[in-house]
Image 1 (cartoon, rainbow, N blue to C red):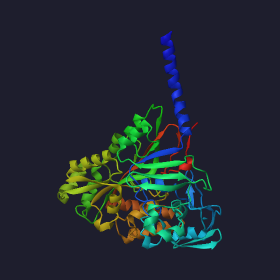
Image 2 (cartoon, rainbow, N blue to C red; image 1 turned 60 degrees about the horizontal axis):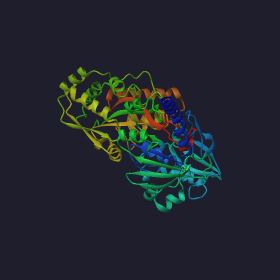
Image 3 (cartoon, rainbow, N blue to C red; image 1 turned 180 degrees about the horizontal axis):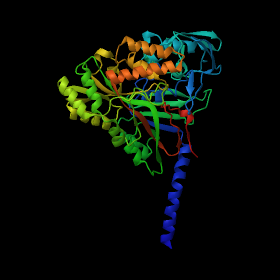
Image 4 (cartoon, rainbow, N blue to C red; image 1 turned 120 degrees about the vertical axis):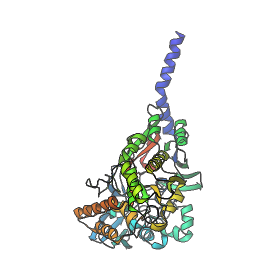
Length: 499
């Protein structure tokens, strides 16, 4: 009889365990988020990368945003209308305040737009907004944007343009603003312990949906196994960038879940065609033939990610089924290396954000066809600085990822291949012309045709090797309601504890 009571009690305890966890979570007023690295910036008009974006997008509002289904919807702008092909007027909310209590005005919106397009700021996002000529206050709650040319991707790009307070930026300067940002979003900045964490608190004066957590702590946890262990131990509530193997380890967990989503981000190999050994086309082609994308996505990444043959994903406007790319053919790669002459030793540069298993597999594949190559791993800020050194001085070879969070080819191709971009890989007038034409045409078929030509240029000249459409795998407490999106948004005020 005693044994039956013990067994019954144990079973009852297991049955109640998930409920207990949910109840505890519902009462929890803090969320702890494990990033891969600390943000490289908290100024939303400087670097754009997931670790930065996860944090600062909760501090700032944008002119427009995307809902969880991907539809572009109002945020600071309540509506907009085209005055002509090159002028668009935005009507603004009148009930928004910054975290210091001052009202957000049309002057702040115009300042924010003009700031990011000012070459003096040297924003890495400049190419995303270069079609905007100027922003002007055109009413008490209205701002009008004047464009250099018609720009069909404008609204898609504006989903990333955050509104900053003119009076704060002007008073403290860009550097100080980055260290102590003031926004109008659902969470306000508290402190940044460099190399450790960023702490935000809920802004109770927020005009929109209030955040469910009083406090949010974003921690830098570079080691993926540590991020997983933190989740399983309840030390953190959410983790970015888990692997497929780690996702499998969460199957059947009573307290933690894996949350995957196929994104608009893609992985690719960035080549410097102006630097030996890849100033030879044959060696760039050999590189492309050497890589088994299907083997990598299935054998290493668990089939979550999907191979691609062009510098965008099916989630983007501009994707073409006609671009096939160079196939995996290691024998062809060896023959090209033999005919071109064995190149000198070089480095494959990777950032700490990239999957080391994939990098090691690519390294091995390159070595197997005859390349003499070794990995050079750097932290994320250093990697970003290196690849922005231009077509002449950027690393000979680097593995990178690419996302504009805009789901339009204009955003992903312009900043990699237009000579006006700080990220550009090539400087070719004919490519600039195609990008300019596609980016300004209101004829969708014309745009698609131009993007196909750029896709074929990538196949023929191999300035990059597209690898795969990336699946973001998040880890989260089971009681946390979170809906992932293809553009990798992370909005605290769209989340909640179950129960």
